[in-house]
Length: 117
Length: 111
Image (cartoon, rainbow over all chains, first blue to last red; front, side):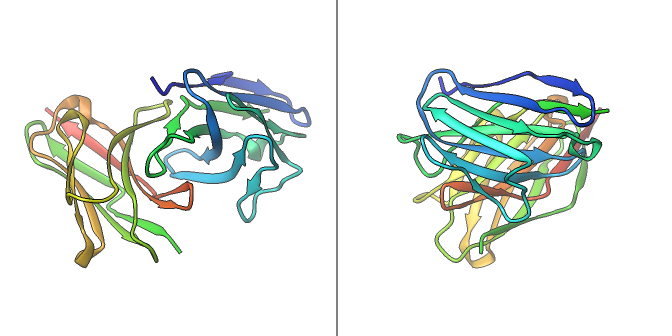
């Protein structure tokens, strides 16, 4: 149980285009989802927290208009990187937490590697 | 504010040797603490967590960690390293419903 999937697993796009990444909880309802960004050989940086049906809460320094997050259902959250540029290239990881999760336990997706040319 | 410091960005051990990965935390409230492992190009897998109660926590793959409030530490250990343990390890502390991660420690295991 507690499986989180991400799609796509990798994507290459041209500079200036937008890319959407999906995060799904496959066998539980995720009341809260989190989006992280990870640069090579570095830690996970929390970008935003999204609760189902409400606006995402972004961490300081993360551009809301650049990284659009939607959490429209209890099993799906999407991250859209708008007008992507090479510096947006990174590994994006989502995680999900259910209302039944104890002690902030989160389940992580396998990640999406974005390369912007 | 909650934060985590992992001492040593890279730890190398021989197969069969003791593994010790260090983590110190800062938290204004009683912390929930986690250790995650990440293999290349994959997401994170939970190794173990401390919430309340027993301070010695046992996790998967033979790992364990001890919560020491007086030292604000939550070091990860394994008595005997396997080649398959080579990976990136992250310590994390809870902040509200979110997790704040340390910078990670790369564990290398040589035969």
